[in-house]
Image (tube, rainbow, N blue to C red; front, side, top):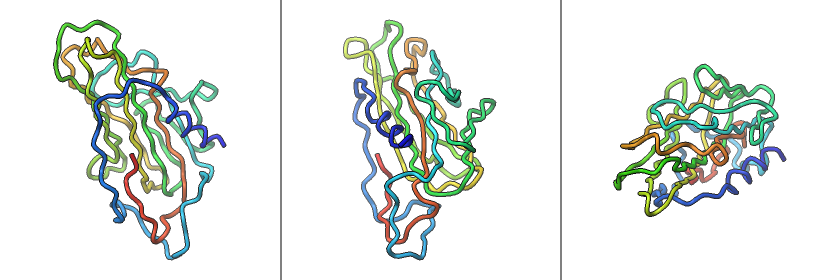
Amino acid sequence: AACATCVVRVWGVHGTPASPVSSPAPSSILPVGLEQTSDPHARLPNSPQGVFAQLVVADGAQLTEGPVQWRSERGLTGVTLAPGVHYDKRTQELVVPEAGVYYVFLHLTLKRVMAGNRNGSDSVSVALDLQPYQAGAALTLTLDLPPPPLGNSAAGFRSSLLHLDAGQRLSVHLRPRIREPLSWQLSAEATVWGLFRVATQVPSGLPLSKLT
């Protein structure tokens, strides 16, 4: 139930959408790193298997390049951590205690906090990185920021099924391309990142594809 709340909370966040971001075409090919099981009748369960987490962004987070700082205190609104799941504040990494197939999601919302003097094509990108390192970001999202006459917020959502090992460390890296970076901030009320395990291994024949 707690994990179901995670998904509802993410999809229920309101915000002015940014420019549409192209989604990868569905594919029947398993993403790199996913392993098949031998059970031809296996399917991903409809509920998580006890490993889950949801974090909210730190209030007033500036748009500086590098790892995003998250709030992980239990009891804080929007924060949920299953026993064994750990957030390392020193490295800004979320550590999963058990291997499995995880549904990973990120809802990013930015708000204008200062009037800008420029009309241009500013953007902010985030990428989910894994340690131990895997070639290429596991999940990416880019938001085009509207000029002052057209809006004061931008939002986007990305998700993916990923096979993670026990002890895998995940972090979200921010890459702003803004000429006036102080004019925008991450919205603490509507920027969330989380995951939950949906299977201990990948069922055979499952049409896995990146979810968006």
